Every structure is written in structure tokens, then in C-alpha cells.
Length: 90
Image (cartoon, rainbow, N blue to C red; front, side, top):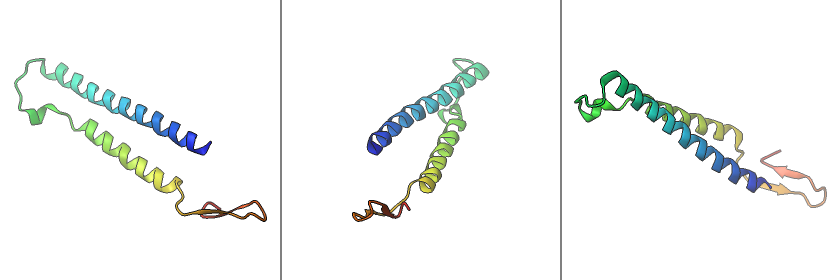
């Protein structure tokens, strides 16, 4: 059951993350078009807003911190005599 929960969480997280970054990029593009017009000649480097990139990097850093805090590392051993879990998770 834990494996199914992990797989489901990964799938939903990936979908929501992609949708969120897509929304940020579309909003930045729409804001640029509204501010500068549709056919405003600009160099390619000044057209992209860095805010979606910064937001994506922030979400990546937050995910790394949460993963480091909530995922325990190391083997988990089960004691056959007591039926109790002994190891890194306890």
C-alpha cells in the first residue's frame, strides 16, 4: 500500500508542478505582451521574465528540503519474535 501511495503522490505532484510552472510562464508571457505589444522588437534575452525560472528553482529547493526532512534513510528490520519494526524508522 505504501508503494501505491508513493507512486500516486509522485504522479499527482508531477502533474501539479508542471501545471503550476506552465501557468507561471503563461502569465509572464501575457504580462509581457500586454506591456510591450504583440510585435514589439526586442532581443530574445529580454523577452523572458526570470520570475517563472526563480519560482521553479524555489519549488525545487523546497521539494529538496522537504524530502530531506521527511524521508528516512537506512534499512528497516523487522523482529520476528516481537513483530515490531526496529531500525531507522523507529
